[in-house]
Structures are given as C-alpha cells and as structure tokens.
Image (tube, rainbow, N blue to C red; front, side, top):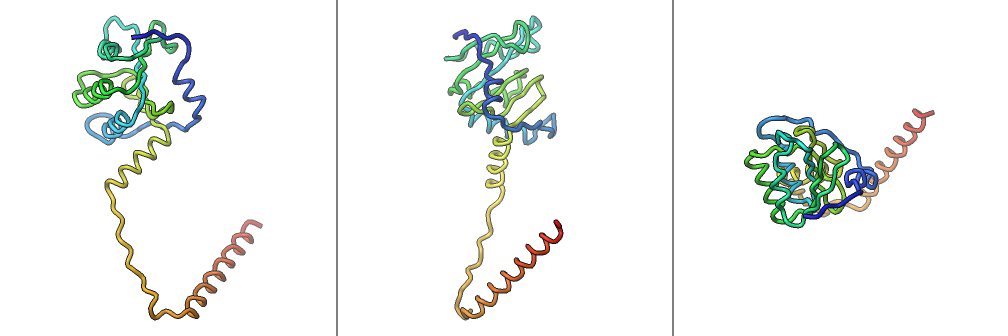
Length: 191
C-alpha cells in the first residue's frame, strides 16, 4: 500500500472529459438492470477508486480492510470529508474478484466508489444509492444489450432482372423531384 498526496482523480477526470453524466433512476431494490450494468462496468474498467470516511461505527466504511488488502493499491486523503481516504488502484484480477463478490453476495455495501477505463469515468456510486453513469458508458452498455437481445432480419435479395434502366431512371427522377419539393417547402416554412 502506498500513500499519495494531492491529485483528486474525480475532479481531474471530470475536468478533462467534460462528459455528460446521468443519474440512474431505475429500480432501487432487488434485481434490475443496474446490477448487470455494474458488473459490465467492473469487467470493463481498468482502474477504480473507493472512498472510506473515518467512521468508528464502520457503517460507512464497509469493505475498507478488503480494499486496503489488495495488491498495488494507493491510499491518499480524500478531500470530500475530513479524515476520509481514497483507495485507488488498477482493476487487477483480485480487485475485479472483490467487486464481483460484493455485487453477488451483497455482504458489503460500498459507500462511495468510481470505476474508470483508461482515465475516463464510467460510473460512480455515492451515499450507497446515488448511481451515476457517463453518457458514453451508458450508450456502450445499451448497444451491447441491443446486440444481445436483437438480431437483424435478413433483407430479401432484390434481383434486377426484369427491371429496365429506363424505369430506374424514372424512379430516380421522381425521387429527386420529391426531395426538391420537400426542401423548397421547408425553406418557405422558415421564411
């Protein structure tokens, strides 16, 4: 474990990426898409930051010892709360297994954490339930879901046999005229 001073990774990432963030407002309890999104974030993250306050009751510091026990983590004071620390590290096999175990067993509730990929924030959780995802990560996740849930219907083959070149030119001319009229109508509406 190594102690670092200074750089606040969340502020640094937010300032560099300027990526729009969204609250996740789906179902808060039980199994829902958030759990799948969180697992995808853990599996695709390259780094993490978990924050633990100086909490004698350990209510807000669940998981502190487990994360401090990971190899190659760095610890620094967290400026968001007096006496709090931020445990930062690469998403090693051990770190990934710990996050996945936390998701699966729910025996530890992490108070505040951020997942990163190549220096860019993917998602974060604060105050146990305030869930935030970045726009790019949400779009990436939804695209993965879409490609998993849906399959394109094959297009029927169109054979050009029997269609004359003159007919195709007539269709092309009709389309061009319709588009020209549409553009003209739009221009007239704006004036």
